[in-house]
Each structure stands twice: as C-alpha cells, then as structure tokens.
Length: 309
Length: 250
Image (tube, rainbow over all chains, first blue to last red; front, side, top):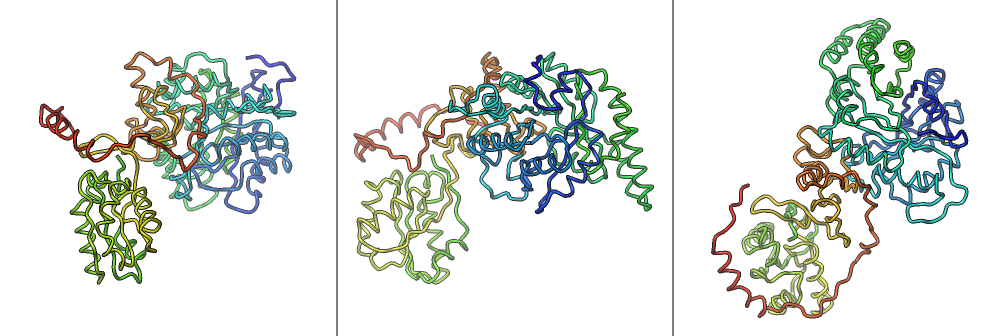
C-alpha cells in the first residue's frame, strides 16, 4: 500500500514506506515505580533502531503501564516507541481510552496483541478480559484513526494519528490456521506485521510460502539471548518458539567462563556466529526488516546490523 | 447440565464454625447425575460432619427433584419444617442456584433465619459423557455457534477469542493455557475445512454482544412443566433408552 505523506505519522512507517530495511528494538518496563532502566536502554539503542516496542505486561506479569513507559521513554530520550497494547487486561472501552490517550501523549505506533492468558503470569487469579481480540483491536484502531469513529459508531473528535501493527507466529503448531488469522488481520487493516521470535530458517520459509505475497511489510522477530537462561526460557516456555539445540548448547557453555568480560565476549561470538547464518538467509525472504528483541543486550545489535548491510 | 465438584470438608467446616446442628440437603438434578448431591453424597457429607461432632438432619431429594426448582424441592423442605426449625445451618449439595433458591425459600417463605451454605463448586454447563464431560456453553444470551462451525469460541477457547487462534497454540494443536485441552480455533478451522467453508474462517467476526448478559437475567415461563407431565414422559423415555444405544467411545 502506498500512503500519502500526510498519512504517515511515524518514523517507523516512513522507513517501511520508503522500502528501507528496518530495525526495531524492544524495551521492557519493570515492576517498579520508575522506568529508569528502559530509558537507559533506549539511549543505547537510539542510533541503532528506528523505533522500540515497549512491552505490555509480557507473559502476563504486571509491570509499569506500557503507555506511561512509552510516553516517558519518548520524552526523555527521543526514541520513537511502539506502544504494545494487549486485550488480556482491558475491555473495549478501556482499549479505546488508551488508544485515544496514546494519541494525546504523542505515541505514533501501536502493536495490537491479544496477550498471554493471565493464568500464565504472576497474578493468576486475575479475571482475564479478552473482550476484543487482536483482529478486532486492529479494526478498532483503524476505525478510530481513519474514520474518526469507535466500533459502536460513536464519533471521535480530532482522532489520533497513529499506526497499528499486528503479530504473526511463524512457528505456530497449526500453520494454516495461523496464516488464515494473519490474513484476517490484514483484512482488518493492519499496517505492518511483526513475527514472534524465529530461530529456524525453514520455519520462516514455510510461513512466507504459506502466506504468499501480501501488501503489508513484515518484520521478523529475532532474539539474540544475553544469557543461557534467556534462551532456555524461550525454548521451554514460549509456545511456538523452538531454540536450536546447537545454539542452546553453545550458550550453556558460556556459563562455565568465570571471567565476566570473557564470558560476554563469548556470548557475543555465539550470537553473531548463529545469527550470521540466519540473517544472511533473511536477505532472501520478503521480510521488510528485523525486530530485535534483544532486551538489555544492545551491544550485540551493531554486529547484527552489519550482517544485513 | 451443571457440573460440580465437592468443596473440601475443611472449607465447609470453616463456614460451620460454632454451628452444632446442620441439615444436609441433597439435589435430585444435576448433582445426582454427577454424584455430588445424590443420596450417597448426602450420607457421606453427613458422616463427615458427625465425625466432627455435628448433629445432622439428612434431606435427600430423589431423582428429578432439583434443589433449584422450588415447586419440587419446597415439598421436601416443608416435609421437614418442624425438624429444620431447630437447626443452626443448612448445607446444600447442589450448584449455587440450588443453594440460593433453598436459602431464599427457608429464610423468606418458611420464616427461619438460618445460614445456608454451599457444599459444591459449580464448574459450568457441560456436555458429552458418559464419563468425560466438557464445559460447552456459558449461556451468554447471544449464541455465536452459527459463525463458528458449531464450536463455541467464547467457551472452548481459553481466552474466549472471537477471532483466533492466538499465537500460543502448542504442539499437537493444544491450548496455550492447558496442554490437555485442544485449541478451539484449530478445531473450528478443521471443522470448517470439513464443511468446505474455510472462506468463513478468514472473515472478521464482530466482538461479542455482552449487552445480552445483563446480570441477573430474568426468565419467565408461562406453562412450567409439572411433576405429572414429567412422570408421564418416563415410559417413553425408558423404552427408548432400553433399546439400541449408540456406541460411546471414551
């Protein structure tokens, strides 16, 4: 899709429209009364990525509001934020309020997600909401921005100007159902897609093949792990994500290195070695960019970007 | 029917602290089918309470006499009016509906002031069987099954999504929340594929109309089924059930 320049509201969308290869990062607010750490990380990522996702209660652990964090990070650092918004914790009224609030606070991108079920997180007795799902949240945001109306048809004065992205899971157990859902999100008006973390090139290839050509840019999610524990967590607990055994073993071996600096060097080496192959392969796919979920690990990004040059 | 599980005796004893005389009321409806309020369940609960020093009055509601239908259960409560009068608490072995109907009747119609306590936890409107049942309907007031190939996404999908599957489908098409459960949306996909209706899968389904579920929902029935009508249906039912039956694999 080609947008007029006055229909482009964010740097992320501008770069995607211009067909530049896009890199985005990820910041995670914590269970804290401040967002000092993600702000610190945002400063380190400033020259490396066009925008950063700010996670919304990931894995259903309740953290600082992603809207508050997105606003504060943008204000303090100038990093453009992708405000992640999940349906798990809010009904359609609260979602609309937050979308309008995001516009007021100068947020230009929202990633619309269903979200993990609350029973998987640190507050398992909470009432799960899921009044909307990712598709109808995408539709809500597009209707608000493009038509100045909410889903009930109520008019919105001076609607916000922002873009909406959606997620896709290339490693989904039932790929055909997943791809049909992704196509449904495209019908709902999603403006770009970001995939769940992928480690296997054949998983990615199968996904692109099943999806076929689409008119929406796709960012492929990668996760260079800063520690063995991070990689192991993904492998064990994140549905639809398998971590290659060789990579996992190499990461495990870094735990034996006593010297902190040497261990860091080895972790970087393992990541760059693994992702060189993956990213070289990515060049031959329809991916429009790469979403680097290297939370707390910005130092690896320059080396990864270099592979894509 | 409404499936139930029995509460742990410790929780019940907590509610009965300081109450010496306890009436134990069963239920001849769903609780009898699921063995949580039948005669044996009443006997077992009574024994547990007696072993803790309680004096127990047992009121068994026979098959088809549901605690939640006062026209029926009220007859058994009235039969025991004199005995009930001196009791400190009533424990009802039914779903929450039965507990509340009995509580209302005793406190408002019979004129006693007696705490009525639940013995069971209702876990939903289930279907299937004979042994394995599953919650299939949440009585939401606006049935969506016509849009989803006869599988309710609000109930069968752990997240109740109208447009799934979510990104968390596990190996073997299992649910993100519980790997013992099937992903409802993969089931819907497969059913639509079987029906040659996969084009419907990609349609955007509107958010559910929760306005149809303003609680408590009220319901009027002009001509309620009485005992004699119910009993009149029994011979036909029996002759059909004693004939050839479908093979039920578990």
